[in-house]
Figure 1 (cartoon, rainbow, N blue to C red):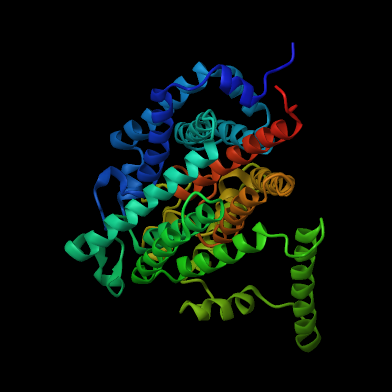
Figure 2 (cartoon, helix red, strand yellow):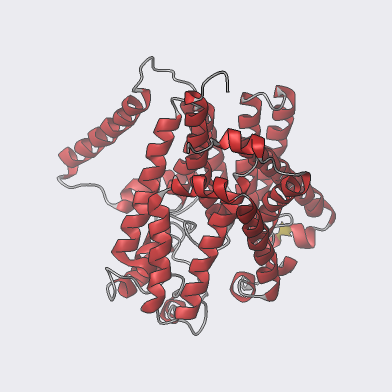
Length: 442
């Protein structure tokens, strides 16, 4: 018997209003739970992430989303299995590797729990795909929720500066979030989402302009130079990707080769004068100087050198997923002793993956990214606007993960959003292919 297409299944088994409301609620709650301070405590001592991640509040918040998604997936099991079969296979392998690492992890219970969290995030992402128009639902609800956070942060920064303004960082706005960089990241993504909505016709250019101006105002007040760079980069990439400016079926390949050739020429010129390749500091210092930062990326290289000592002990298998950065008294205590403060990441996501999941885990993570890139190339032929949006977010995640550990790290917003992106791209691509091959009279 021929398997029903996703569109035909959804016509025969439509979601009722309660199920649609539950999906929309999950989108809103994922944003709030991953961005607002743990336990809604506004703990600015820097310990809330450490003390609240395993708290009852967090378990109830995310546990409720896992439960709702499980119910939805079981109620629509045929469609669930259809989307599960096309999911990024390297994502599943990476999650399996994280689960397996509990066998050699010094903290097996912690490792197993954190790996199960990844499974739960995939389940939520799959549940969102059950909607008849999952992409529109996801982007619109995400856009409005992030805009609401910016508006609330605006009023809190003005009316309650003790909460909304960080005096120690030059009176930078943090609004209702934990820190200024998070507010900057919200503004950056919000600006991009309003541009996407204007391009697909779901909002007017006037509304987009007002939202972008407001977003830039909050972004400037947050004084997050990194988020400002991300905003400019993401907007430029999105408009570059969404239009095929080079009249060729291989426009993206030509653009990539052009960038690579320029980079090689710059490296070759440097080698001619210095008889050596440039160091990391020489490459990053001009860029960092534009945003008032040192070439050592505000001391991050000190952390990297210390983490490399731990990596040398278990290069292939890794220490165990999520078993290193657990604060005072954990395996990262020697890093705390050397730095005299409590870091909760190495500020290099790839280094953290290498440390906790080994070379095998790092290779799987890279394959996840490459598979996503390959899927996006295929999507450009059927839905260039959608491919441009997800391609832009992929590039931003890849770049920012070099200085902030976000990939495959718990309930952080960027990780949750990335997991959702992985599932959405494969599911959307399958739906687009089915629509393209479906007979007109069906």
